[in-house]
Image 1 (cartoon, rainbow over the protein chains, first blue to last red):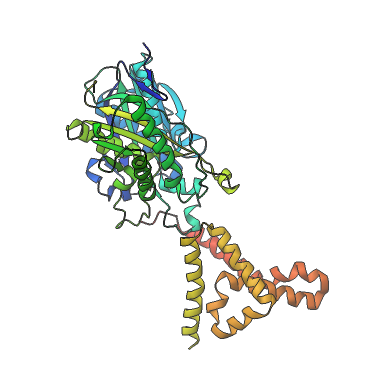
Image 2 (tube, rainbow over the protein chains, first blue to last red):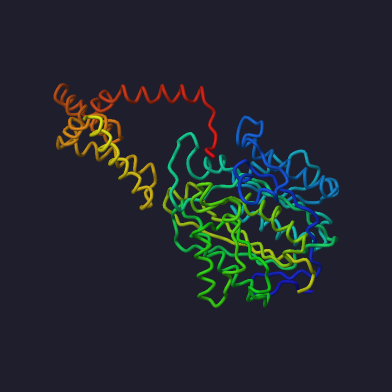
Length: 339
Length: 118
């Protein structure tokens, strides 16, 4: 049976179940409004390591161990780990996953990686290629600043539209059996480049990609904004969120009530001085693994679209003046297998 | 009185930098280089030294002051050594500043461990 529907979407015949999630966040994230949803909050962003890169790998390794303990499904019962992060060559995930006794695919989708891993995990699990897959990402403020902007030691000024990379890891175990919540549909984004070249305004670079994927999702699946209790974008921040809602409105979709942005939720934008909000693939991952999953379990949310957005440049292309290609992947999660 | 003048002029030079950070897409590195180059250009016409005479450290401490030192150094070395002075003057005049920056950075890097501001 052909499960691919419309232009870029899949409707799963056997929707995989999200068995369990885990999230570990940094100190600043733990001081934000969502603190009670996270499993573990660090006191210190080094977490006993001598570099931030090692701390980020530890974040991811411990999140993976935590979800295994919580679900009682260990690496020997997991066929695939799909993981990524923001550091060059995805070393955050590479070091974190050494020691686990199962197959590993390293992914890079910038801040969209959590939705990318959930999408691929759902395909693998629903397709009968695995009983369990573990989907995981992380980001760390201090490694990301070094990777994409300036090392912290440089003490550079932050511009008003710049976003604050979230220090966090979030992960989920998908299973071909279970009681939900289920991944019922996915819509995989295409590269959208609207010519933004300002590395400090990634929300604006990613918003058109988010709009494209969202409109495609509604067209492909026949769903409407009101079918969702929550449309969660990854890290568009203050600037990108407004652009997304306005583009959708111009295209006849009113998402002002359903839309929330993980980058705006994880911090108190005014009190925590994070300028345009949070970003990084740990942002969507931890808000999904913490807030969304727990609210779905409580039935206070029943159908959620998690759409993580990524800015797919690298520091070299930005210095050369190239524009920033954006992408967005949407994952439709519901407490019921059917609409 | 020189303190007040230094505060006002130095502050205004920084305000220009802050406006450039907030309102333009210029990267910090470009703003930094622009300040040095403006100091050089102003001193080529002898203007920056007049500003330093007026407000002291208010003009000599910002990066434009470094540009002024480079320009003055080149002028002096050209007078003394001729053509070769174009190459030696700038760094000779600013040697104390550059070496101090290096040494203090090294000391800071040895003593302190970086962390994010919360």
